[in-house]
Length: 219
Image (cartoon, rainbow, N blue to C red):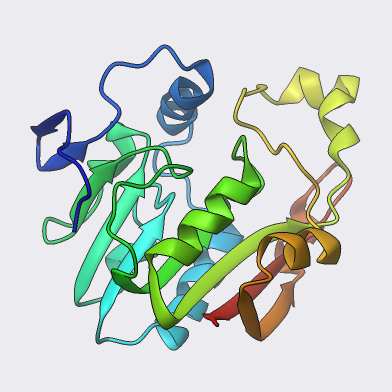
């Protein structure tokens, strides 16, 4: 499965990051600590969609799995990837836990039948590297389940009332995702299904946005 040896294996976590000075990656541990146990409404919806779309057969990987709310609800061969040890520690015991940078995954080419990547694409430093890695690790005709905020107004982060109420993280949303960005980064995939999730928007106090959930097939 792996293309290199992990730096360490501790508490069943294959750690490919070790000690890091990367403030961006470290900020995910800060976020994990602050948001521990917090399951959003959109994550509940992602879980239901993945339970319908992901086959019980084959190898499944959740890239940026968080505390495993989606992955824990699936069965079979499962791998969870996150940069936070705290979050990986919440995964079910029979899930393979991998601490790694999602833009540089330690997996063999064409190893997984399904990849799940929800609430990740908008956070990463280099979205093209993530998209290329998702393509690389999937088998031919493999399935990708992707969820992204759609046409979000990022100016919300600069609003005084937002700054007063919410903590700012280095790993916060870095890009507003639209159709052009999806076509540019996922041109090696074919869109199988897509749906706009608007339920959570009504609970957003500042500049609400919808979530686009997309199912891709690797060409």
